[in-house]
Structures are given as C-alpha cells and as structure tokens.
Amino acid sequence: MEEIIEYLKHKMTIQEVEQNLNLMKVRGKINFPIERTINEIKEYFSKTDYTPLFSEDKKGHVIQFGIFKKIEDRPKYWLNVILFFATIASTIFAGSLNSGGDPFRNLGDLWLGIPFSFSIMAILTCHELGHYFVSRRAGMITSLPYFIPVPLHFIGTFGAVIQMKSIVPSRKSLLRVGMAGPISGFLVALPITIIGLALSNIKIATEATGYLRLGDSLLFLALAKIIHPNIPQGADIILHPMAFAGWLGLFVTSMNLIPIGQLDGGHVAYSVLLQKRRYSYIPIMIGLLGLGFLWQGWIIWIFLAYFIARRDPVIQDSLTPLTKKEKLYALIPLIILILTFVPQPFILK
Image (tube, rainbow, N blue to C red; front, top):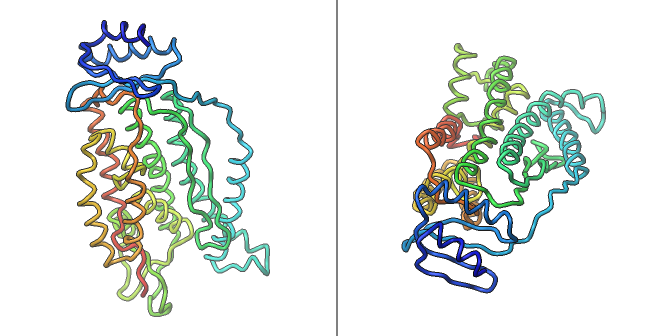
C-alpha cells in the first residue's frame, strides 16, 4: 500500500491517512481538474487488486480503497426464462378472470386474458430492460429481469426486479440507470393506455353498484377526457383490459418514482442531491401519512419506505458533479411522477 500512497501524493494533497483492517482511507484535496484526475487514478488502480471509492466529507476529498470481492459475470438465464413464462401464464389467467372468463371450467376463456397479459408484460419488460441495457452500457454487472408471478391474483404478478451486482461507477451512471426504467415503461404504457381507453365502453354506473373504481392521475384523466369527451351524467368508463394494464403501469411507475431509498426515484434524487436527499424524507413521509386518509395503502407504504430508505447507493465516484444538462434530465422523472401520481388509487362505489 505504500507504493499506492506514493502514487496518490502526485494526484492530491494528502492531509490524513487512515487504515481500518484491509480498508485504507486517504483524505485531502484531489488535483484539479477533478474528473480527469479521478479517471487517471482509476486507470492506475485497474492494474492492482484494489478498488477505489471517491467521496467527500467536511474535511475534504476522500479516497477509500481495499480489496473487494470480484464478481464474475456468468449469468444463468434459465431462472429468468422460467419466471418470465410463468408470469405470462399467471397474467393471462388473471386477465381472463377480470374479463368475465372462467378458465377453471373452460380453458378457451384463457384467450380473454391475452390483451391484459400482453400489455402488462410489455410495460414491465421494457421498464426492466431499460435499467438492464443502460447499466450494462455503464460497465455494471446486472442480471436480466426476474419476474414475479402470483397465481390466483387479480393482477397475476408483483412486477419484476433486476439485480445490480457491481458498484455504480458515477453519479451520472446512477442518474441514467434510475431514469431508464421508468421512462421506458412510461413510453410503452402511454400508447397502451390510449388504445385501451379507445376500446373501453361507457356504461351507466347504477347498473353496477358496489364496484371498485380506479382513481385518476392527471394524465389518465386528461386522456379519458380527450378520448371520451361526452360521458353522460351517472355513467362511467368500463376499462378495457389494455386500459386497465396501462393504468396499472402508470400507477406503478409513479410509486417507483417517489424519491426515497432504493426506488428509481430515490436513485435519481441521490444522484442529484447525494446525502442532502435525506432532508426530503420527513416531508415525503408526512405527505404519505396525509394521503393515508384517502387510501390506507399509503400507511403501509410509509413503513416500506422507511426500510428501503435506510441504505444509500454505493457510487465509486461521487465527486464528479452532474452537468446542468444532466440536472435538467433529472426533471423528466419528476414530471412523470406528477402526471401519473394517483392520490386515491382505489375507490369503492
């Protein structure tokens, strides 16, 4: 490690050196321009067994380096494939039941579930592949999506996740990976919602008392007004399965963009604010608590948010700031959140 310290003396003004077991921490001031110097240090470390992490505290710049476990990129796709097709099956089954079919008695009714299954799977797949391709392009080791089938459930799935196994290279990478999924899913959910609304029927609400009505986001309400401008008094839109899938896709997108913890919105917020992100947690929690009077699910979400908010992403280079253009890009997920957020998702009529 002495050789590394000697090298770092040419790249920064060292004020303090600490060693904690196998982790070395060097504090000081990195030579300007910081981004170029960091890239040079990364190049040097790539020829060693050590991995450097760049951060900042009240005393100055901090470089930590140690030997981290090497992660081999040897994906096994069989589980991803099995879960993918299992989720197609479970969403077809759910879509059939939601469309009035009874696949328990008549397997032919499974055809009724295809529009919903195709729509929701397209949204989920594009969302997760957005994360996957952008993270791989950034040099990260990332798994393909793991879909979560839920048999005998009115949706048929709890979504999908990908596993990011390596350190995020930079704030810019975290921003792009965090944005890629919601934007990709949103761009697919939007036309599916439009087509689904166009295929939806208008019926008098009194003919179906005791039904569950879906709440409106600003975007969904606007699209419904444009596509069905003349809804008679006492009538409502009976959503086509594609419209229901589009509504779900937009709703899940908005929940995922809440700027906390390991959610996509949390990653975007952390890339912009770093540790200052924690100052937003109290107002967000208060807001969710207030929304709990409209829908009790937000109360549950507060507890989930608390647990997922306890860990920050590990960024190799958190010193190089985002450009003004990248900060403007970070407004896109915020705009999508505002457009797709549903204060009261489910209303019993």
